[in-house]
Image (tube, rainbow, N blue to C red; front, side, top):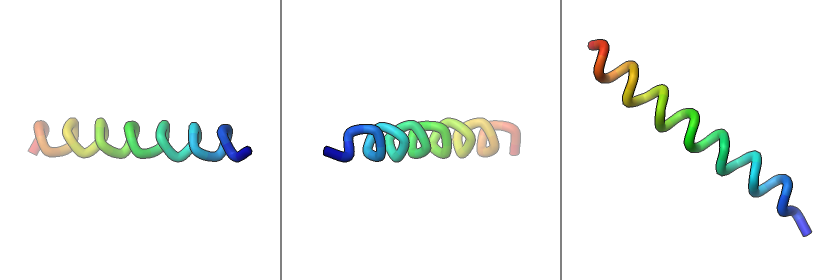
Amino acid sequence: TDDIYILILNIGLVVCFALGIIAGGQR
């Protein structure tokens, strides 16, 4: 299965979401 691939995608999505909130909060 591609569990590792899915895990990486989920981590990337969470990181992008967190960075978006941080950037939006700073602006």
